[in-house]
Every structure is written in structure tokens, then in C-alpha cells.
Image (cartoon, rainbow, N blue to C red):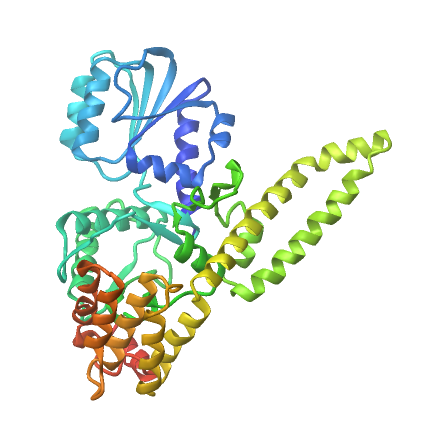
Amino acid sequence: MSAVAAIRLYIDKMIEESGPGMKVLMMDKETTTTVSVVYAQSEMLLKEVYLFERIDVCAGTEAMKHMKCIAFLRPIRENVELLVQELRNPRYGQYYIYFSNTVNRSDIKELAEADDQECIQEVKEFFGDYVALAPHLFSFNLTGCFQGQRWSTAAFERSVQGLVALLLSLRKAPVVRYQCNSEPARRLAEGVSQWMKREAKLFDFRKPEVPPLLLILDRRSDVVTPLLNQWTYQAMVHELLKIQNNRVNLSQVPGLSRDLQDMVLSEDNDEFYSNNMYKNFGEIGSNIKDLMEEFQAKTKSHEKVESIADMKAFVEHYPQFKKIQGTVAKHVTLVGELSRLVGAHSLLEVSEVEQEIVATRDHSDLLKRVRSLIGSSKVRDIDCLRLVILYALHFDKHSSSDLSGLVHLLKNRGISEPLLRMIPAALDFQERKLQPNDKFSADNVRAFTKKV
């Protein structure tokens, strides 16, 4: 069960069904991301896909009747209208149209009426309406999903559509369960269940002995973890450098060569990353050293090219050598930048205080240390803010709480009002009904599992 394999299978089917010949892949903003995360452009070229274009920015390009167009689009109104315009004045000889989710019959009828030249060869639903970041990790790339404590309408609808597409692509008809004391979780579960009932024929899969389970949890049942600095490789890269659709942008880091300013981090094609993404920062340093030694050994072996046999061996192993070279350069650069940021922003000390806030009851000593870090110019504003939020979550009701004093220190530091409003917002977001016990106790975990 792999989200990446499911999306790749859909793309392979699209290309296969269009037959031999030169092809163009037409996408929208979202399906462009869906495809690019799981398929490299070089791989697509090997399958005779020579052009890539966005349906919303391709107007005015010249006609190429000798090419076949594979259109992979979300079934939204804007895309249907753009496709109708394309079919009224077709630039390509044949069109194979694939929607990433269920499409209305009225939209199909509209496309048929616009196809005066009978260019459409296929219209199908391929359920790739999500971004497959890893075999067991997917995203809809949504931000601002809530308005106050409730779903925004657009984010809710997109989440339901994406989850349904994921289930269909994996050929799963699950039992849906949700966290009973969460209204957003209940609404999302009901939305998915209603869609499954409405499209029952699509979900008519062979039923296993033990049915799969779709479990929907509310992030508010653990407010603390997102506020802590992380110390495993993938989490550190995302926290400090940002991973967006499996890419890391280091263009702001001085002194890097151009090919290292935009890196791809994918466990599917990077063995070192796959093996180390969940290792802690200390282990990564040791494993990087081993990788360097392996590379140096291969470099020395390639220095000795004295015979035809040596030349043949060099040519055969050159692609692997270049791949290792690229892997070494990438991860040495990443670990080096992470190390620089850890030292420059006193992240070890910040993390130590974070952990002590979570684990200790000694208020007076912690308050002094939090004040000291807020006063340090090395500590980032975001870390100071998160320390105060953690303090508020833990000591809000403490008799000696000095939350107002810490907020005043943040103001003196120049932190903006919108950011300061995150402190009371975090307390409100936590909602006592989602955290009936002390949110920092182990018993709360056991209590939570009984409510699912």
C-alpha cells in the first residue's frame, strides 16, 4: 500500500493508453505538483513525453497536430472551462483526458459538445487528487483550514475530495472512525462516509477479512509536540530549512554552488536519506562520515585507469560513482547548514529548556531560564515565542505564573502583535474538553485512546 506507487501507476496508464508517438502532458497548478513529486522530467522523456504545460498559461502557443495531448486535471469548474476553450480550437491531434477525481456528467456533456473536430480519444477518472510525498505520507498542500474553531468550507471540501481519492487509488473501502470529542474530526468523517455511500459502485472492492480503518484525529489532542524543536534528520531539515513538496531551497545560504541551492529529498531515490531520515542528529554525523569514507574509497579506485579493463570498469561504474558523489555533496551541505543554525541560534539550550518545561514542575528556575533566553540576541524570535507558549500551556494556572511579564519581554524584543496573539490563541485552541487531564502527563495518553 503505497501512495507514491498509486500515483505512478496512474501516470504510467495515461502514457500507455495514449500509445506510441510524441506527447505533451497538460496539467493544472495542483496536478503539476502531484506529477512532479513522483516522476522526474528525465523519466517522462524516456516515455516520449516531450512537452509539459499548464492549462491556465498555455494560451497562444502554436498548434502541433502531430502530438498527442494527455490532460491530467482536477475536475473543477475553471479547468473544465479552459478545456472547453482548448477543444474548440485544438492545438494537438488527439486528446486523452484524465480527471483526478469524480467529474459531473454535465461537465462531460459540455466537453463532448465542444469537441467539434472529434479530437477526444479518452475521458477517464484517475484518482490522483493528492500529493504523494512518500509511500505512507501525503498532503493536500492546504493552509488556513480553520475559521476560528471550525472548518473553512473550501478546505473541508478539498480534504474530503482528497481523502476519497486516496482511498480509491489504494483500493480501500475502510471503516471510518474519528475522535468523538472533536467536532471537526466528526464532520470530516461524516463527509468521507457520505461520499463513500454516494459513490458505492466505486468502492465495490473485494472485502478482506479484517476491514481497513480510516482513523481521523484532532491535532489539538497534542498541542505541545509542534512547539518543540526536533532532533531527527527529516524533522530538523523541515523545521530549520523547510521541505516543500520534497524539495529544499538553500538559495539564501551563501557560498553554495548552483546545483546545491535546490535539493530533492525523497526516500524513494535517496538511499542515505531513506535510511537516516528518522535518526537523531548525533547519529547523522557518524553516518555522514561513513558515507564520505565510502566515497573516498571509490574515488581512489577510479584514479587507477591503466588498462582497457580499468577503463571498462570505470565506464560501467561511473553512473553509480556520480550518484554517490551527488548524495555526499547534498547531505554534507545539509548537515553542515543544520550544524551552523544549531550553534548560531543556541538551539541545544533552547531545546533543553523546552524539554524541562514539558517534564518538570520547578517553576522558579524555569522562569529565570526562559527570561534569560528571551534576552539573548542569538535566540530566534520564533523560539522565544514558542517558549512562552509552552510556559503558558504548562503554568497558566500556577500561583506564581508571570505570563504577562514574559509577554512584556517579547514586546520589548520587537515581536509583533499578531504573533503575540498566538499565546492566548494557543490556550484557546487547546480546549479543555480535548485535554481533560494534565496535558503533560502520561495518563492523558491512555485517557485519550479510550475516546477514539
